[in-house]
Image (tube, rainbow, N blue to C red; front, side, top):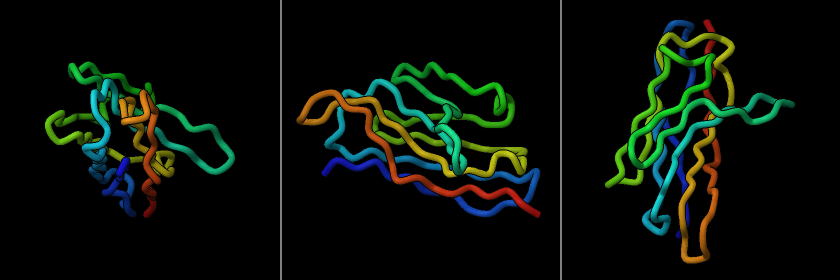
Length: 119
């Protein structure tokens, strides 16, 4: 079964930390890029951070120095360590996987995980 599953969201106070995880099922292979996006109601989904299979990373300017993306190729898993969280980081965070399934190349999304930053 083709699945992308996120976990780790929740409620945190400003200045706090959260760690998001995203696992892609084994039926997704030859993954080239895994990334995190976020979306607020009524707004477009935007890139937060992405990592290639080779380990190259890309971050949105708004999270540089606060968020760190890392991956485990053997486990088809990517993580997003979020530190110094701000109220404006509150969004639904989605994981995206660029890879192949038995049906060819696909961009696959998870169901999203809510991150709320509030005192």
